[in-house]
Amino acid sequence: MDKIKRLQKAMPDTMEAAIFRDPSNRFYLTGMRSSAGTVVVTKKHAWLIIDFRYFEDAEKKVKNCIVIEETALYEQIRGLLLEEGVRTLSIHSGLTSLEEHIAMTTVLYPVQIDISSKLHKLIETLRMEEDEEEIACHRKAQQITDHVFSHICGFIRPGLTELDVSREIGVMLTQLGSDDRNFNFIVASGENSSLPHGFATNRMIRNGDFVTMDFGAVYGGYLADMTRTVAVGHVSDEQRKVYETVKEAQKRAFDKIRPGAICKEVDAAARDYIYEQGYRGCFSHGLGHSVGVEVHENPRFNEVCTEKLIPGIVITVEPGIYLKGRFGVRIEDMIVVREDGFEDLATSPKELIIL
Figure 1 (tube, rainbow, N blue to C red):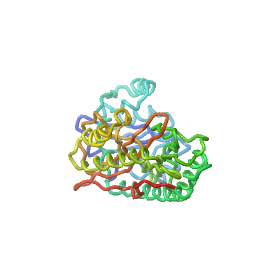
Figure 2: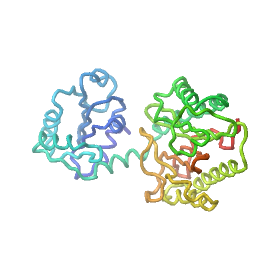
Figure 3: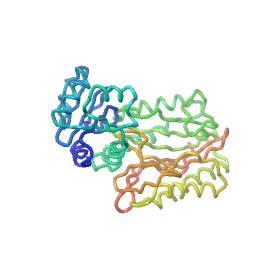
Figure 4: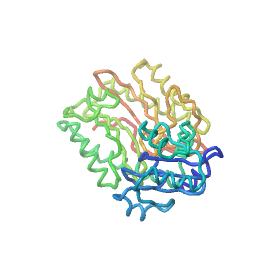
């Protein structure tokens, strides 16, 4: 279903109109990328108000709402809402600045501004349950990501720096059709791999290193997110044990994933196993996060999330063990929750690869 029609259908009787100014929701609703623009939705109509830089492109690309060139934004919104008899406008309070709120409160009067969490919860719920068209974009992005991983395994060798590997990943993502390079992906080797979000440096890769790579392609505006840790030359018994522990932890989480499963219980399946193996305190981030038009969405696999999984959620499963100042391992797959369990979109191998 068209995203705006889906939103209109889901709007409760107590919500007369909604406004979105952030890039992610603007893209989600209209399918157009831009650095500016405002989407206004009532139960009957929808408008994209956008400035001259994007107006011509928006007229061509945006088909599910009326495109208006921005001249005096809040005065234009006020006119549209009053013409429809709208008395209250709901905003995404978590994404609205104080300056924007003051401007809307002042200029849109007598329209009142609803700053409750209603719109935040509504759009989050809609984005959580992805349709097959969206999942197909994730699948294509993941296919590109898998191809890049296969290539990079033939590229890594002692003497290269983390930055060399990072640049090669970026080049290959673009060559293979990624819309963008996604988030600031991670390449961390040796002692740097103990940093869960360590970015690429000039550190030179050496024999005996683990190299952790966390990256993903973008296709049709939807993202992939995958992490693989490979070894260079050889591994110690301790390195192998840590790797196999992480792999088994991911499998235990997979065994819990199905519609109705509670997110924190999936997290516990992996976390408890890691702790039981003697690595308490070495896995401090959540087990995973949903992925959509942004790399980190909700719900999440962590120790506090009580959301239940439903079919259509695209979410990562990424246990890790990080031994401070020594090395770390993370394995991450992006999966889709299905009626009968889940579909793993990642096909890159998870057996320990020694290059």
